[in-house]
Amino acid sequence: MASALTRRRRTAISVAVAAALLSTGGVIGSMSIKSPAQALADSGPPKASLITAPVVERRMIKSIVFRGDFGTGRQTEITPTGAVAADGGSGEGEGGGGGRLVVTKVLVNPGAKVGAARPLVEVSGRPVFALPGPLPSYRDLLPGRRGEDIAQLQDALAGLGLSRGGDPEGYFGAGTQRAVERLYRRMGYAAPVTGPRTEDAVTQARAALEEKQRQVDELVKGRTERPTPRPTADAGDARGAGGAGSAGSAGSAGSADTAGSAGAVDTSGSAGTSGSAGTSDSADTSGSSGSATSSDTADALRRARKELAAARVAYGEAVARDGVMIPMSEMVFAARLPARVTSLPLAVGDDVEGPVAVLTSGGPRLTGYLDPALKGRVTTGTRVEITSEALGTTATGTVGSVGAQVTPGDAKSRTKESGGAAGQARQDDAGTVNGGVPFLPVSVVPDKPWSEQLAGQNVMIKISSALTDGKVLAVPQAAMLTGADARTTVTVLAADGSERRVVVIAGVSADGMVQITPGGGERIAAGDRVVIGQ
Image (tube, rainbow, N blue to C red):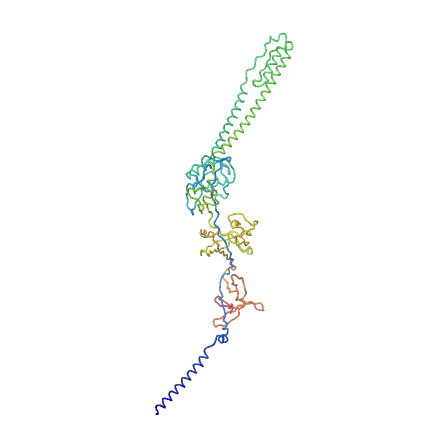
């Protein structure tokens, strides 16, 4: 009985304890679990913390950043055309232009570097090559011609050790012909010549010269070979006329006064009693006739000699225009050699209807597009750093020149090619350069030759200019505070979290940093941390 009562008590106590525990757990659970709204209501802002930056010691450098494009260099297209011989005729000898133009041999590979007088291809069995010179080819170079292109040819030949001889500068004479003939011989080809037209002209001029010489010779011979004068009349034929002898004498005198064969006169003395007077008249008439004939002969001789001199000049000119030449179908001038063979569009057997080769000289060239507002900030000789984001490469150089402002698409601002930045920034693609925004073209001279991979790349150009001679203390601009008293201060945060204000004097600024100098008695050093925000 007692044990049953004990068991019931224990059960009752266990139930009461369990109920108490459940109640307590419920209370505790309700206190720890919050609704989203309650959690948001109970939350608050975190305690503010300070943002600091170190005081640094550095040289203050101002950076200017702008974009630029690498050009592919100056390109020269070689397009053979039918050669034109002297006087506009088609040459039919060596180098003549009559017949089909077809590629018969390719002598170089794309990407190869070629120098002066290096045959690139053969067109219809004839070589195609380049010589150095800024003036482009625009005509056949023919003997007897003058001009700047002839002088450029002579300079190119001299660079190859081939002298123009006694030819004046800019004249294609016999000395230049010999040099051209030797040039072709070096390349392994016969030198082209002007052809039958000029040969025929020489033949005709020679015949005309010989004819004029023959005429002069005949006139000179006729003048020197005089016929024998007739004898004077007998004294007996002038009987009883004392004047007969004097008439005969008059006749002789008249014969002596005349020149050449025209001096012969007839003095028969048949004038009777008036023979003296008649004979005198005959003598005078004979002398006048001889003088007129001599004058005509002299005039004819002078005219013949003048025509002979003109024939000699014409013959010399015909000879000067005949001989060795350089047709435009075989040679072009390239601005700079050696050059790189960019492309060879045609293959052996193709008809020539366009360029047979494209040369690129000078390598990649960089033109920067500087904001006109920065005019005067960038000068010749300033150091430059170039970065190609696409290639992941960098290079260095110096500013070579700063050109006049260019407005893309504006014809008035187009510049002539001069090998510098202004020339490279020509408006061939009007309105597309620099996105159509006006700029100052900046040329850059590399410290080392530009990589060929840079051709056609758009790059970042960075120019840094020193604003201080040496290292100075500097802090971010955000650390600078200016109070109502116009004093400039920075807040230094100590290691223990304490703060102190330091009066400073601001100097130059660059790239978000400001030079500082501590005020009188103040202390601040590199490595200290200054407050820039919170």
